[in-house]
Image (cartoon, rainbow, N blue to C red):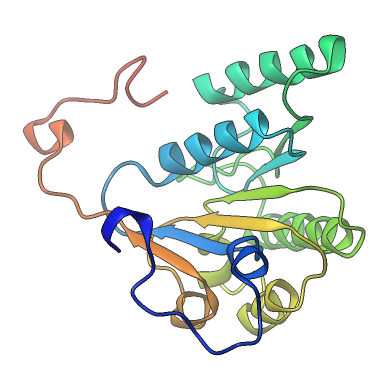
Length: 204
């Protein structure tokens, strides 16, 4: 892709502008750090373009507060007050969705995940947002809480100009096949390998 030019121009009957502005299904996966961070960077660019952005977190506990959440809520308030950028919503899809999953039963978590996915489906049908960030959504798919075939069908057949970014390890092969853009984060080294815990400003 030298100088941002595609290496192939498909014979699809679309103009360059039409092809360039197709809505994308994107996946950030892999074992390396940075999947959500990159997705939030994309959301920041979407906000700057004036898009309505909705973030749905599927695993992190509602008790945790990421630095990105505070920043985006501030940007959302700026939009509401001055009309700068786009509208922003940030949704945590259930208390106790940390790795320990101590609060509630697995059935409770599965029901919450499915309810969250149903809300996303409703918003997609209504063309409510320009960008959806489904953070760590690969996990409820892999755990069987949300049906991958239904997810793929919904996302591939969504209407309008709605971009969707999904993050999480071990993205399902069907999701990878359906996506327009897939990035795999590969871990080379991490401070945790040397016994160092996550730190403020780096992990949250």
